[in-house]
Structure formats: C-alpha cells, structure tokens
Length: 170
Image (cartoon, rainbow, N blue to C red; front, top):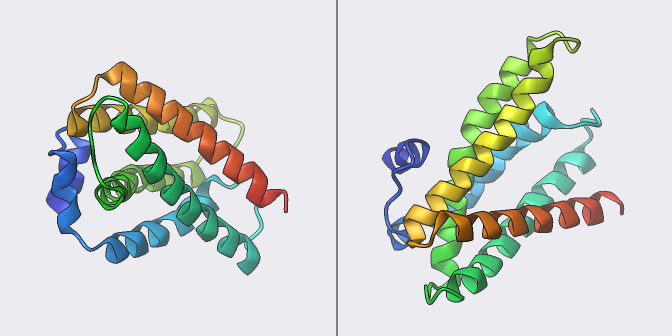
C-alpha cells in the first residue's frame, strides 16, 4: 500500500481496478485516523469537543460514500464501467495520499505567525495541490481526459461543500 501511495504522490497511479486488492475497512480506518489531525489543523472554529470529532468523522465517511457513487456515474458516462467497491477503494487510497501531505503542511502552519503571508499562501497551495493530485490521478487511473476529471473533481468538491454545510448546520 505504501508503494501505491508513493505512486499517487508521483502522479503515476495504476489502473483504478488495481486498488481493490486492499481491504476496504482497513483503508477506511486509515483514512479516518488521518482525517482527525487534519480537522484540527485546518478547522476554522477551534473546538476540540468529542461531538466535533464525531461529526467530522461522520462527514468524511458520508462524503467518501457519496464521492464513490458519483464517480461510478461520472465515469460511466464515458463508458468506463466500474463497480461501486472498485471506485470506493480508489477514492479511499486517493484520499489517504492527499491527506498525508496536507497534514504535514498543517503542522508547518502551526509554527508560523498568523500575520505572515505564508499563513495565507500555504492553505491556498495545499488546496491547489490536493485538486491537482486528485484530477491527474483520476484521469490517469481511469483513462479519461484531465478536463473530464476536472469536472468530476469540481462536482465532488461541491458535494463536499453541501454535506459540510448540512452536517455542521445541524
């Protein structure tokens, strides 16, 4: 799994079906464990309550499921027929490969003065990096164009935003 994560970071993913060899439950656990520090590092509202942690974990779980369902539909529009479980495994390994460097950048932010330009530039750079990583890896692994992958990733971002607003407004 570590070699596949490194391949994602190098923008050299294998075919989307390759990632189904890993246990889905294990990848979910790894992803959820990695998202706990991510939420503390990038949280606008600094509350460390157990309810906040629980809602973030529920959010990550729900969004991951929705992303997989959407990508099955989205890739199917280009005659790329993948099962839900194959796409879910791909999304999980992609999410893990994205959140690791974002956590490292978040740790760097902890050591910066909140008044510095770097404090603004690093989160913006992290967002661009995450989008680029998702777009290129999706395009290569599924065999669609980068423009089509961009459209899918932007719609997924919109889905994430809607789920975030819905969960955190409750």
